[in-house]
Image 1: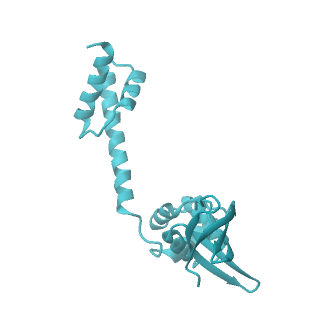
Image 2: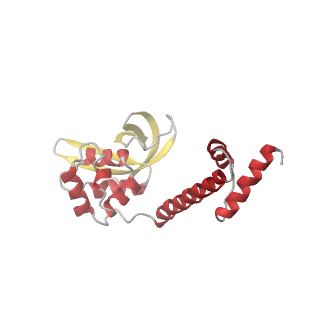
Image 3: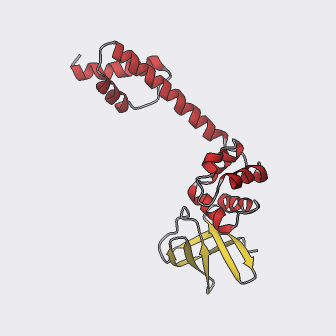
Length: 199
């Protein structure tokens, strides 16, 4: 198996790159999310070689994680290399991990060619093979939710103090920095609003 290739980009197009390695040119199929530098630049692609009776096709990725995920996706019955590549392009590996871990069939069906039955097979057959969603991603979403609740509370308090909604929203948009809670954000917003009135 050819696990990786390092060489110069000879030419490239949508979904492929022609890579020159020690005098040999390799055509490598790549997802659109894999960014290939301009011609003449040296790159390394993590690859998977698919052997068929009438063809040898190389698929390449700039991240080893994507290559490994591609191989896991192909372990699902009914999913070949083209569909696995489309899955990485359409949804991304991180979102795929979350969708499979939470049995989110709607997200999986965003992949071109994947219907409900194939999505169900993906959940059943892949399980934890792709790896679990990262804790950092979950923490980020939780932090975003907390920030939204704090902002909404501050906006309501300012409106009750007589400030117009449009001005309140504009002021909150302009706030920079992190705030420990509602009171800190409210003080910062009041300070900004007071400065605008010349207080």
